Length: 145
Image 1 (spheres, one colour):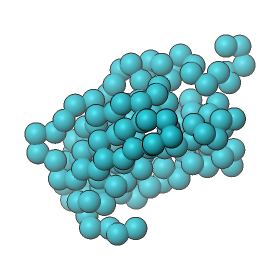
Image 2 (tube, rainbow, N blue to C red):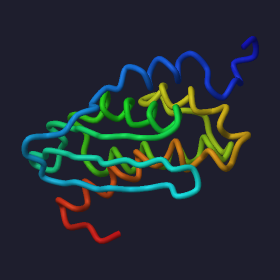
Image 3 (spheres, helix red, strand yellow):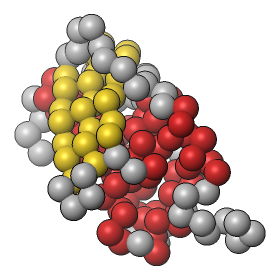
C-alpha cells in the first residue's frame, strides 16, 4: 500500500481487531439491531444514557472488516456524545464515502474509510454501525426520524 487507497489498510485492520466496545451492557437504555442483507453484516448496538449523552456503549458485530472497524470506532469514541453528535459523525462519514468532503477535524479517524468511496457497495458496511447507534439512541429518546 503505497498510495493509502487500499480498502483494507492496516488502520482498518487494527481498529477492527481492537473491537472496542464489543460486549453487552448489563442494563441498556437503548438498543438497535440492523442487518445488511447484501453482505451479511449484522450489528446489535446498545447504549446507556444520562441526560441524552452516552455513558456506555456496547456492540455485537458480525461482518466484514469495514463494519467491524466502524463499530470499534464508535466503541472507542461514543462515550460522552449525544444524538446530535452521532448524527453529525454519521453525516460526515456519508459525505466522505460519497466523495463530498474530507474527514472533519473532530473525527479524523473517519479518513481511514475514504478508500471505500471507490466501492459503493461497501458504503453500507461502514455506515451500518453508525445507523445502528442512531437507532439505539432514538429507541431511548423517542425520536421518530
